[in-house]
Length: 357
Image 1 (tube, rainbow, N blue to C red):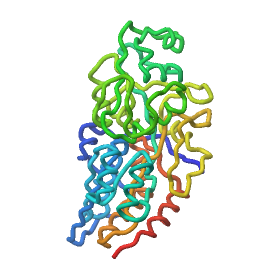
Image 2 (image 1 turned 60 degrees about the horizontal axis):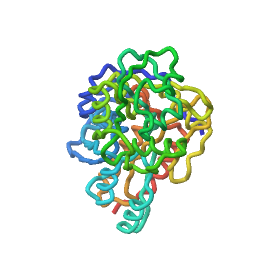
Image 3 (image 1 turned 90 degrees about the horizontal axis):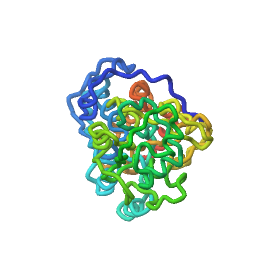
Image 4 (image 1 turned 180 degrees about the vertical axis):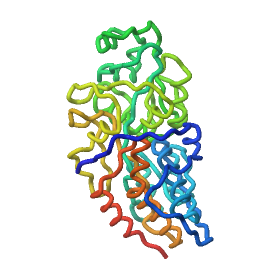
């Protein structure tokens, strides 16, 4: 399976408006003017901040251009909180950058006597953004990445950072590492990579971990703000947040030893030639492709195998399938990696299995 994405065409959007979910439509998405029936169907979802700019744009555009009677509200509360709401049945769908597993999967099975349905909606990169005036390009080797997140490399003029950046003037300034304070799929993608490449990483993998060092921020928004407001800070955020906030992004060393600048194209190469399993729970903690950006992952929407309200399910399914097809242009414009046609076909088949009563 090969993920492909065209060169991103960024919209001129205020990041505050985008992240608040008040985005205007992104032009013609290949639909005619909507003609509503007057019966409004309200759908609620909650979860990952990683895809929040994309989801909010998709849902706004769908209501404006496809069907104004389908209103989807999305709470960007983090993958962990979103999965808890989904398990508790307080939302119509959940969203996560980490596939269902462990205690949460067991809790869902115990409550519903079945497995949840998770389908990939997009891919993207998790980048290291930084605030270091005068350093326009920053290379971060795997050894330096491990040292920063483990709290072993603590100053910007450390010899190991200097060795990777011989042409940069690095200040004698403390490094502040910014991480998520909430349960986060972005954290899961990031630490899944760290756990793979750092031999001494003590915190394991999860949507929440016990960080050896650093300061926390709520959501991708909070971490981006920490970086933007505090000189000397470096932290991980989803690519779109770094781009929208005009944060410098480091080149990261991949498995082949190449330093790769983050981009949707480089993120898509992490998935090239990798087969997505039956439950769509693909993880690529350390991509093999020598051109791949090393920290990339999928983001999923979780739906129930059965809905009591047939109209609501048909409306939700319609939104999801539109997003994966006509909505691909929006995904590209916002620098996400759209799902390829073969995966979209598989998703459609799986969604057709959902029952209503």
